Length: 594
Image 1 (cartoon, rainbow, N blue to C red):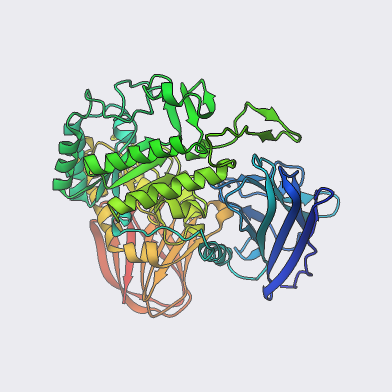
Image 2 (cartoon, rainbow, N blue to C red):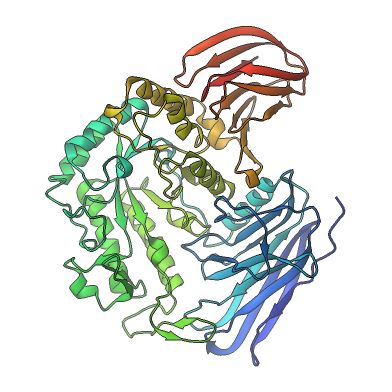
């Protein structure tokens, strides 16, 4: 590929009296670090300041970022861009070509404060106008600022460019990821889709017993345990006391789940204090804003009293009930309020009160979430903390050790996309699927696709196991057993998700002499090596597939299984170079054994 000429970086919007500098450091050919430094004569809320550069549209067809969802298309330079902050999204984008080669990956070191990132097509010149806009939602005054931009134009696979960004972030002081206990890397049972708020200890324990027998190692008890109200609102959040109508004798209930062999995680909506809670009276004047639709306020973490209340709540729960982890929800709602004084360009200033010990909301959130994991680890070193997309950026990795795909009930394709997007920039943090659910009268092969689509993450299950037909139970048991047997390859192997613009139709993971491939549409699967064993999963409802043997495999044992793991054939077969059609049942798999 012809080399792109060196970028010219510019900085705009620096006010009179302030000073700025840009320093470009070439790490290697095609990899730049751009250091931006700002200094103000006194503490001020700075205006919007933009770091920008141009990049010609050469061999670029697609754009990936952590919040892409199903859209990997290019945007115009007048489009809105990508918002990020500590508890929302991550400051990284990747422009790549049709063969998955990196053409421009850029990321910013400041994952704490609100940013706006763009890589937009300029219609007049056919170049990308790239920029990072600082201080667009800045609420607190500053006197100085320093950050780095990494710009990678190396001709490497897009996933290697993103892995390099993850390693860059992880090595930064203050960004060190939390320890990931072994217990974060086992399938879990969730009560959300299977129970919603209709909880009872006996029913939870019954599902836990069945889930444990299938290979699950923990249960996550979701929303509903804290209130007798079942309207799925948040007006009763805030006191965080167990509803005696639903889960009486909580400590004994948790102990019984432990006796079954499973860990116990409990859900909390961190920022919400409902208007029907008792604590509302003491905290109602310490809110960032109130959401009338939810019937709850969003507490302001700049008050030490607020942070201490939340921290004490979690500490007591872990101690009193012997919890193994917390599912901490809605932390992305810690943001600037809709009320308050408007200051230019749609920005807001939060009023600073004498009782506050922080003026910056992002810094106060960082303090709160850092203290949560530190103080809970002091009680239980193996504590599990789950966050869900889109609060899954580089700073969130130091606050928690499980990231879960955001809710996509029964949507297996979206679950696949979201888990793989998380895998690309999350290093060793445990990536979990959204809770898997399906209709009990679904065809068994179609139900199996729910699991097959999230093989490269840790599955969470949320069905009433005892209400599944026998063949569904057999299928679920097989795929969880399969996942456990291949976990080291699926989670620790080299991950190569192909064609993100087509929502990852083929994904490969390799470790040592084993390669596992899952394909999700009719395609030709290329086998490049002759000295390894292959396992190939049919993530479709078609009944055959084609492999392209690129290296002479010779005579191999070919084992074919259906979606319930039943071996439908096993025989020797010559696999010379060229195309071979293999009959594989829908949602089944085959193994090529040396």
